[in-house]
Image (tube, rainbow, N blue to C red; front, side, top):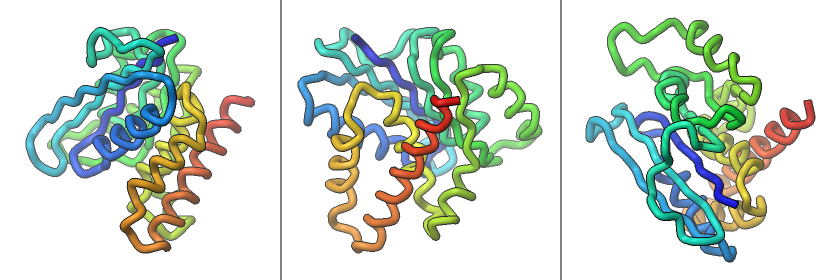
Length: 195
């Protein structure tokens, strides 16, 4: 069964890192993946979106068709909203509610959140606050990766092993904080699914 995923955010948030970690995890299984990415402005703060298609057989294309994504992972609320058209009606939204106001006239946050809340399958996280609780504000993307992993056709240990491989060259404390945030995100997604 194919799982289609969109990861949306802005440059510098780790969208491509998350894609690479998931891709590495898929390689540890008998599944196949096609990944494609679109960069907006070629600078920090420009829009970035990654399409991932995971299947038992090689997917025919790397781009997820509109209204077909099973999962929309948004690292920034406005970018999450901009990609709602890719989500299927039964699809899951996982989004940070921390805005990156990189454009003039950025919409009021509460308006964005109200739109995201219309989808009953939404998990909206104050990712920066949760990451700060573990003294690692830079790890918001790892927290969101953990939450997304719950909805992927992969074992959490495969994604965790890929995460370990990615951060193996970092200080032990950075790896430990990333692992703790990953587990926290996974736990939050499980709790949300049980509601």
